[in-house]
Image (cartoon, rainbow, N blue to C red):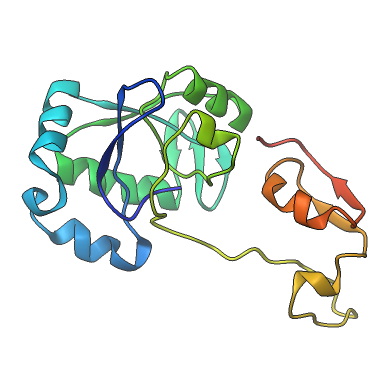
Length: 187
């Protein structure tokens, strides 16, 4: 998840973690502001000392992002190129083979930031989050011959297909539903 403000936060081990993403609705307006209006003196000093930021991504989550031929591509990549230019700090891709590996690298502090990540209770144990720079509603796809529904509660007792672990935060709310978990993607 990319954030709506540039924030330096102290993480659980008192190390400084830079979380600096912008709200999609305000992102281009924010990116046009001088860096002195976006980042505090402390944040600018941190970046100067850090010299580069290491970034973990989901290597297979298009159109949001993907690692393709060793390069970060997709919507997140486009925006982060603007951010790196604005803060005059290279953002270096940390190569991973899966979303689970990216999460593990985050836990091990091998990356300074994630390009796009949703907060979950488990992730909050080792990551800090701020407001998203982009958000997309959860949708449920049905066949053309199925009745439209307005709320998940209308189908909670129906069999549902959910990509394994990508929407795990929904599962407790759907405890009465039966569901099929597909390809594993991450906690």
